[in-house]
Image (cartoon, rainbow, N blue to C red; front, side):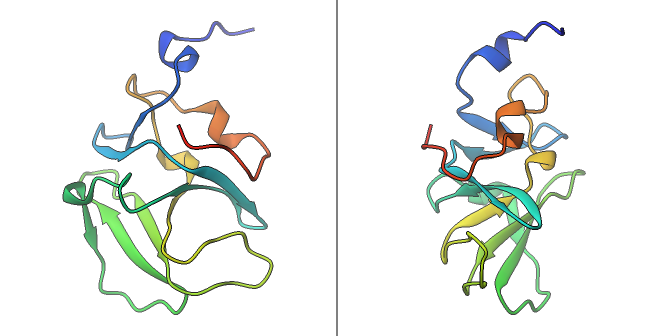
Length: 119
């Protein structure tokens, strides 16, 4: 069994892209749908200076990207989807695109749960 790093033991407060760009401060929960897990954020948790809006039309969401080589996709939900746990006005990022302050993946974001409290 692999030893857990100091980052893995602590509560994750800041979330980064694989390029090391701070993209969020905390999160609300992990929403799991048929498309897989997505980490949910409120407006105040996203570091808006580190993302840019993409002018690609989408029906259900607005698309943003991180201002770094990782080019992480961020969704801002605009309409509800049937049988999907996404909330209008919340931001969503794939956990595969997020890292902790040590640059490591965050296993807790991949767990099969749909209600995780804000940290």
